[in-house]
Image 1 (cartoon, rainbow, N blue to C red):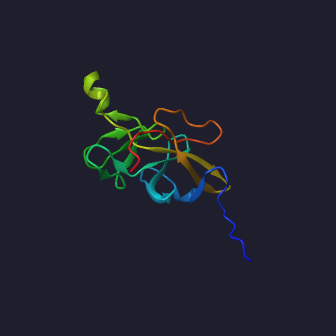
Image 2: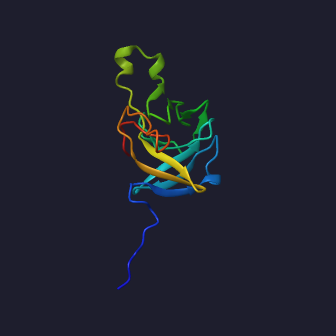
Image 3: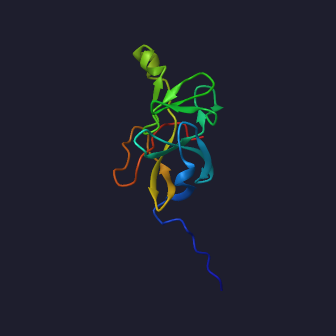
Length: 143
């Protein structure tokens, strides 16, 4: 009887890209946990992973870029923090009542080991990055 051996560790992380494939400012699209994710490297060198849909109008972020460590949607230039998923613009210029309704993007626990970028589970909205696992999670639109 043959046994299938997974290369993914039992902690919920999946190997999704070679480290040298993840650069900046453009995004790399891969699949993790059965859905598309986008990967990019922040200015400090750490990789992050986040959902591929901008919740503003449900359009893809694939052609966007990282601008000063903010995910910039290519359609209407809404921006998001790729570490927390929080919307940064237009939320920062809206009145507080309107800003409260602006949704973020899902972000995933991310780590880099042995020349690979690994993507873990979605980080709960507003949760800080796992100090042991890496950067990149939060948000509330899990598309």
